[in-house]
Each structure stands twice: as C-alpha cells, then as structure tokens.
Length: 397
View 1 (cartoon, rainbow, N blue to C red):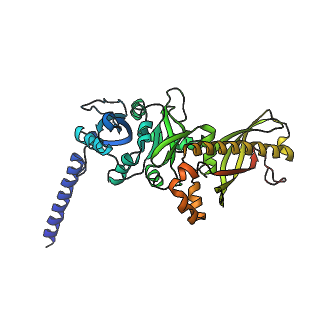
View 2 (cartoon, rainbow, N blue to C red):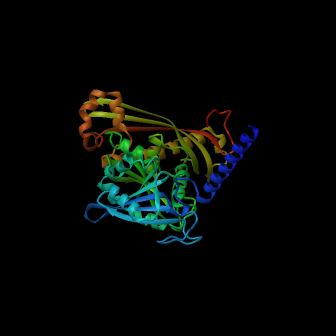
View 3 (cartoon, one colour):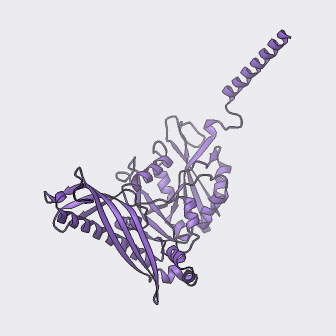
C-alpha cells in the first residue's frame, strides 16, 4: 500500500511538471502571443466623405517588434491603424477585421474628436462605446483644436512610453497648473442628456517645440463648450480659469494679479467654497454666485518691502486678486451665455430650488432663459501665506 501511494505521488509530480512546461513553452492558455496583441492607447475620430467617420487608433507596440505593416526592433512605440465606416462602430469592426492584431480597447486612455465631429454631434460616436463591452474603462475626451484628430495621433507616434500615457499625464499635470479640464467620456455622455447642465472638456493640439506636458508634445488649449452633444464655442485662458473657479473644478491654479499700491504677485489658488443662489423675478430667474478662494503667494515683483507686514497692503493685494477672478468669471459667463451653453449648470440650480419654475423654462433654457439670465458674481480671496512669512498675529492675511 505504501509503495502504491509513492507511485501515485510520483505520477502526479510528473504530470504537474509536464503541464507547467507546456505553459512556459506555449504561453498562457487562451492568450494571444505578445506580437499579436494590440492594446489601443488612443482613438481619434474624424468625419469622412458621405457623412461617415474615419477612426484612427494608436496601438501600443512596446517591444518595437517587426510587423507585417510596419514597425521594427527598437522602432516606434505606437502603430497607427485607420478605417472608414458609416458609423464609428462600423469603422472599429473594420479595423478589427483588417489587422493581424488582436485589438484590445479595455485600457484605452483617451479619445480625440475633431471639431467637425464635435459640431455634428457626439451622441452617436460615443454611445457606441457605452454599449460595447470592449470599452470597459472611461477614457478622457478631448477636442482636436486647429487640426484633425488623426493628425494629433500621427504626430504623437514617436512618444514614449506611449501616446495614451503621455496624454493622460499631460492632462493630470496641466489641470493643476493651467486653466484646462478634460472630462471623462461616460461622465460627458451622462451630462449631455441633462438640460441646464451642459458638458465641457479640454481642447488638445500638438506643439513640437512648446507645450504643457511631460514630452512638450501635447498642448491642452481652451475649454470646448457643448449644448447637448454639439460643440458650440470655446473658452480661452482667463475665461477657462474663471469657469474652473466658479464651478469648483479649480484644484491648483496659477493666478497673476497686481495691487493698486504697486507690485505684481503670482498665487497658487483653489476654489474652497462656492454658493449659488437662484431667485425668481418677473423677468425670470436671476443667479448670484459667490466664491471664496484660498491663495498662497508664490512670487512677488516690484512690491513694497513691507507688504507682508502691512494690513493695508495685504487688503489691496486681496482686492486685486478678487478683481481679476471676478473679471474672469464674468467673461466666461458672457461667452457661455452667448453660445447658449450652460456649462455653469445654473439650470440645475433652478430645477433644484424651484421645480415648478424649471418645468416652464426647461424647453427653451439654453436658447432663451439662460442667455438672458442676470448673474451677479462676488469673489472673496483669503491669502493663507505670503511665501515663507505667515500672518498668525494678523489672522488670515
């Protein structure tokens, strides 16, 4: 009996060894070989003749492997593929059918759409992704500004480690330092279906010698404003900053301001608290936006030597920063109202504070009520520190 048990154990050990050798020699069961796996990092969507779409994908080629249609050892980290279809879904299926690669979209990091596609409407192109199990993650959405989506991808082909990682890194880095905000695709899809709460996202272009990103290749530029699923206008620089602060999206932004008694100051700011109140009048709803902003001084130029110790100088500094932000918010509001794009979500406040009034307004909210809405803006700035000097005796600076 003991010998039989020994022989059974020996046979099991041999069987396990053979199975492990098979796994090592042939790869994982059911898995595609590395050179046949195509992980899609980015997707670009442009219009095509006869109302179709051209879809371009950047496929990660981490090993720089030789491929039937391009690539070489140590070559580009990206392989570009492109196909045309009546719908985005048709183009994606064509890509899958005409490439030797097993395409995987589960880790796609970003989608870039051209302005022409965005003006035509994003409901169709993006909802295809929401319905497909291929798109499990929620990539970032960008609008190609000044060039086609395929041009953005083609110019990024040489990026390391890959264009998807670089673009996400650029967006994360830039959103803390520059007035930009890229939204996620599925958040955008949800928001575009709600009147009085219009979506917005960042524009992107390629800059070979300048830009705001780890490789100086991607440059995020401006805020694309939508009415429903259609692009209707842009916010630039200071307007984007005003929108970020007023809507609570500002995390760490940079603000330059001047005090009327002299000096140019640069702050790192964040919108700490905001309050939006809506009142009903005979002329329609009116809104009051109040934002309390915390600021930390980063640099000062041509400033009075004792500005940090003078309550009057600090008060002038707070006033100067508040005036700049108030102007930025008002400018962004004028731009959004002119385009009929309620990216400030004021309609949502009307709906929550007075549902009965919203019922009568929602039908023509963007094209009438929001465009003529009176909005007052108040900004308060608290200077938490002035460089290495704090103000514990004076209280908040």
